[in-house]
Each structure stands twice: as structure tokens, then as C-alpha cells.
Image (cartoon, one colour):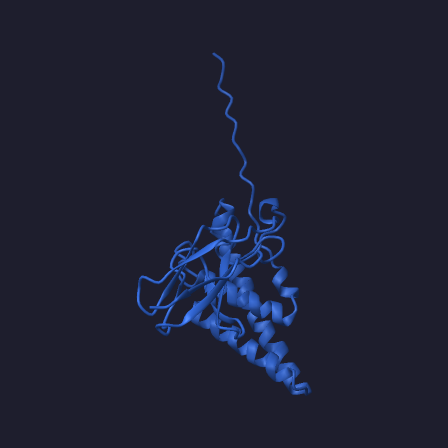
Length: 213
């Protein structure tokens, strides 16, 4: 009797990158903000080793220390380095947890906000989003767009008239992106870009304008 040959497909291991540890201060701060936004309500990672409020506190402390160190002084620089080490340590713990979950879907791992190691699928430029606006709800503008492949999150900005662009938040997915507490009768300019991929950001979407009701 001939035995059956059983072949097992070995699943590739998705490794989380720790390259953030050597990033410049501003880049590390921005990366921490992204991770916090991506993990805040992400059901894939329910048992974070560092809770979001604690991680946010470390990020804010580091951000404040960067500002203080820019004024000069050895003490301020030492405090910045200490705050950086604390933040990097917390992010390392979180990265280890994300990897330990054992997810085999690249997009699910990227939804944590962390980058991946040697994964070609994540090393492609992100496509430019195409957005539309909906003002059917008073004092709000809903931003609608199709999800961008391999994006980890979406950065939203708005402006009025010829004023400078203002940050409106980083959203972990393409659902529920809404500008709130707007002024009726005011025309708002809105743009959005995807975060992730080899270029870190997609091109900004074309600016779309609509009056809030």
C-alpha cells in the first residue's frame, strides 16, 4: 500500500521593522502619532502591552522635549534623550506584540501602523486617493474615498479661503473620515493622502471644496 505524501506549505513570517528606533526625532514623533492612531480602535490588537493612554503620554512628553531642547541647554537635551528612549522602548514592546499575534495577512499587520521587514508587497508607492465630500449632515463634511492598497492610515487636511492647510487627524482606515464642528455657509477645502509604502506617503488627493450646511 502506497503511503500518501503530505506536503505542507510553509507560511512566510511577516516581520515587524524596528527601524523607527534610529529615525530622526521629528520622524520618530510622527511615527508614534501614526501608530497610536492606527491602534487606538483596532480590534486586531486587543491586548497591547502599553495601553494607548500611556503610549500617548510618552509621545506627548517626547514632542514637548523636542521643543524644549531646540532652545538649547545640556539639561534639555538630556531630558529629550530620556524621553526618546522611553518612547522607543514602548514602541519596541508594541512592535513585538504585533508580531507575536502571528497574522499572515500583510494588510492586517500594516494596519498597526508599523512597517515591515523585507516585504516587497509593502515596498510599493501608494496610489493617489480620489475623494468626494458629502454635506448632507449639518456642521459636518464626510470624506469619501476608496481604500488605497497597502496604506496604513490616511492623513486629512483642510483649509478655508486662502488660509494655510490645517491638520484634521490621521485615520486608520477609509471609513468614518469626517470633518466635524464646521461653520454653516463656509466653504471648506479638503485634501487627503495615504500613509505607508516605500515612499511613506501617497501624493495628496486633488483638493475638493464644498460648503458646510
